[in-house]
Image (cartoon, rainbow, N blue to C red; front, side):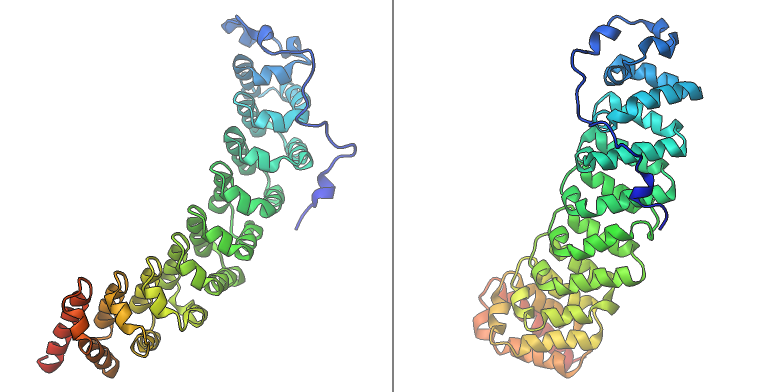
Length: 368
């Protein structure tokens, strides 16, 4: 894979990143500064750059120095700020300095900054902070490919937690959007390993769908297998059902395992707010023999009448009539079963609708 964590960690470690420097404050240094201060040499503020970076005016001064492209200035700023990388990345003014610093650092300096973040144990804290999230995305953008992979490996155990945070989610989504599939493989594996937890989240369900579309080879099939394994629970979930629906629509060839998980449950699902969408999608998108299996389960169920009277089930029955019109005997059996319950259906608000559809289908059979 390239250099491991140990190869990048300097002897001696780093200063604690959340420490405060006692007896100092930033505001008195920079209050009342006018434009000429931008031209003052960096040496004037030697030993004070941490406070400079956290001050809105001082932050602009440091950004200007970094934009100047003077390597000596870059080294001076880097040497004073590298011990406080975590603190500055989550600071409103400091994060702007760090983003600018990332742009002008050489590879060795970037490696040291990354080591500081990893050693601090604060990568989750950074990602879940409004400023830190943006700063982390900029860092990932500017790292070399081997170091990007190191970041992804560090993010892997935090994936579920970050996806549930409005700022942390942006970091994970950035990786998915900007990095090649091979580099984000650890994240995809983590999603597969925790698929139900992620898919049952309001934002996580959309993330799972993007993962399936991006994943390749074994990882894609691992994701699909996990969707199938959790299909019954996800089908009844207000967010998870979207994951199952999209799998049926976009990967119908991979639905054998899914059907096995749902077998014997199609009637119950049809009478569920969210499950009914899954059953309808199965009827509309799956292969003919698979659709016939679902309809056969309807016609042999003791709860078929309950399905016809259900506010969600009747719509599934109408869809079954629609998609089975070219399926011969199974279509006729379905029609006759519905008509056989005419007494219970004709005055029912939902039943009368499916009864009307069955009567129309019967007339077409008699007079094509």
